[in-house]
Image (tube, rainbow, N blue to C red; front, top):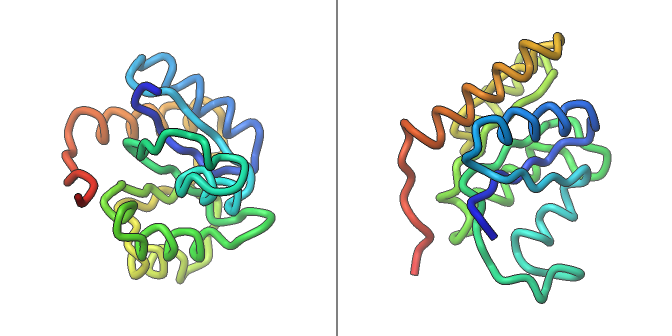
Length: 144
C-alpha cells in the first residue's frame, strides 16, 4: 500500500471532499472509516483486517462526532498505543464545544481544526492540512 491518510469520519460528503483534495495533491491515498471501532481494528490488524500487512498511516484525520465511539476516546486509544502514538492526528470537526479543543490537546492531538461549512473552504482546508503534513512536518518513526 502506498502512503495513506486514515480518515475517521461519518459524513459521506466530508469523506468525498477529503479524498478529492488528497487525490489532487497526488501524495496520499485516503482510507476512510465511518466508525471508530472499525478504524481501530484496521490499524491494529484485528478482526476482518488480521491478514492485512501492518502499515501505519502518514496521518490520521479524526472527527469527534462519530456514531459508535466518541472521537476523544479514539484519540486517547491511539495515543496510548506505543506503535501508533507517533502518527500525527488532526482533529477536524464541526464541534464548537468550548472544551473540545483543550480535551483533544490533553489526549495528544497534534492539530485541531474546525470544519468549514462551505464545500470549497472545506476542500481548501484539507489541502492545507495535507500540504503541511506531507511537506513541512516530520514525525518520528514507529518504535522498534
